[in-house]
Image (cartoon, rainbow, N blue to C red; front, top):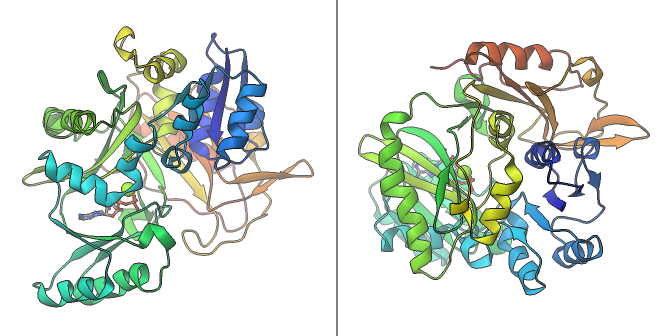
Length: 421
Ligand SMILES: Nc1ncnc2c1ncn2[C@@H]1O[C@H](COP(=O)(O)OP(=O)(O)O)[C@@H](O)[C@H]1O
Ligand SMILES: [Mg+2]
């Protein structure tokens, strides 16, 4: 069969790397891809947002399965567009993807179906939002642009004054355009943050292995948030809570979507806060996480393609549960100087050739480009070095040893991924 992967980040490189290993796959394409995907797939010059262009390509090349990495095309309805033309596309359709595309929808879904989350208040009027903030007891509060904002729409505020500034960015200055036309204020939750990713076709629910992302740019979780600086899988703190998370959050969410007539097919990512009162939903994503995907797929021993196919066809029950390498994996992201603030692009990257890659060590490309045969930076998160090891310490050592071979001006990464217990 022929497969098309949509997207151009580290997650999509890892998907292509894994899908390429499937004996079922004849031709593999990635649109638009990056220099990493080019090594395992044929890159196609069609943007991930160009739904009609992707459909035309899938028709012309007789693509049997299209696998969508990022949330943008899913929320825009790529699965619906393909369905109308009888092409199989993996991921939730537009209605189901709204669970990520609209944080206010996700919150209402939770409230209506009694899925535990923070208290919240939704506003689309700036004056009403301000007067709400004036009249509450001061203290921390979280301000969220409801729509897709590429990870930049959330501000954790220490007090109402900060919240006013964040709300004004959305409702008054329209910094996020339509995505910020509705704002969700949320009770600030304290606890340990974890994410739980499951594969579901709306009937069968298959949990993936646990993984923990590190969002803050600096060691010890210092500094501003990023798209994700590194991941450890599995997460050892979780088993205690696992049953509770499944029965109170994951199952009820899939069920709630069904009851709303929004049957979910795809990866469902639940971002949770484990509070003293139990797990609480922070948000949902309608796709795999980046960089969680990179170490998870290094650990996945089963063929991914039949799982994706069965999910897209609504026949996930027919599949064996996926088999995972019991060994842990660590992923560390190398970033451009200045990221998550402003950064230079087009900086030459050296040293990749010195790294011996294989099934236990991969350097996934995120923000890279080729210019005249030379590799250079083309994004904030540049490379995701991902390694398996006998234990977390061994995986960590292997990832960092590889990372030390890589050089580019301004390169920075966290040095503590896999170090905390
Ligand atoms: N209610 C909350 N209480 C405390 N922290 C929160 C809350 N909601 C979000 N956060 C923090 O903000 C981060 C980003 O919020 P999230 O809802 O995941 O938005 P996005 O990933 O779309 O930017 C979370 O990973 C978490 O660290
Ligand atoms: Mg998030």
